[in-house]
Image (cartoon, rainbow, N blue to C red; front, top):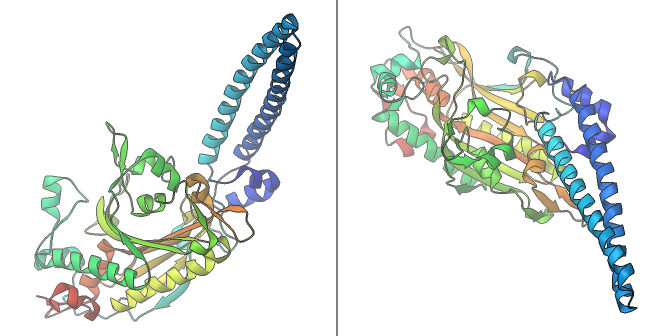
Length: 423
């Protein structure tokens, strides 16, 4: 959530930067300022009444000491009227504050200066690419056919018991899933991230805290009776660990990791791009989260990108790093790098990680602050990244490492799988 003071002091800049995300702020930004003006005016009136009421209270006490009961009673009556006026102004204040909050919830984060212009994924910038795209044998298959051939994943059974987008992993397919989760968690803890096992459902406040609500309400599975939401990513519960917290500057960085299943409705998704593991309603992911000092958050973002690169190298997968354009960024992000691996059988790039700096956007919603070395209380910066999401990693391993003899398991995974080939 943007800060009102920043909007007031940089109104035109805010509108122009929002335009890079293809968000028209020309109406809502002035409306926020107008409501904030009303709030300030109400606050001034309320402060004046409270000051007068306090002064009257002192006078009443003095008059009672002097035995001037009639005059004291007149002032008491005036004080009662002032208190009624104060209650009315407090209600007006609360209404203005709620209106400002609801308007701010509709405004996305400002993109960083380095974010390229553009509206579609095709306009993202390729920042880095590594690894040779393998040449497959003539009978090479896409992962959904390999999964059936080697009895790794049962998509039809998932449809039977739940619906499309809920696959059932079996045999060596299930072991490969578990191996990847263990591999990612071990790598994260070796890199200094503390492991957590958070709940898989969150309350409404947590959804608002990280920006999923109200922006992506229709994409989240909602448990209506209890008003809880199935998490779309471990980012939501883990980042909310820090809601209403005040840290010291020396506490940073705070590095945390978690494995969770993730649930996304993916409304409107259909066609060839959702076949197999390409797009699911439930999938597994290991997430990394950092809480950092604002002066160091962009160095941290680069470090997180480099960390995910090491995972992809160890999995022996060709990959590239994209700097997302304004139109392809998430609502809450200030700068995002997407990591994509190449699916040789499908002849396309598949997103496997999104690494973002949210600057103070989530922290302002969360009231996540810290005492800086200058003694001032400031908002922290939050960052997160997938390290990694499993479905497309599994798809790429099956497709890129297939041979006429079977599917070769990357060396880094073999101690977790217990086998070096699927055949």
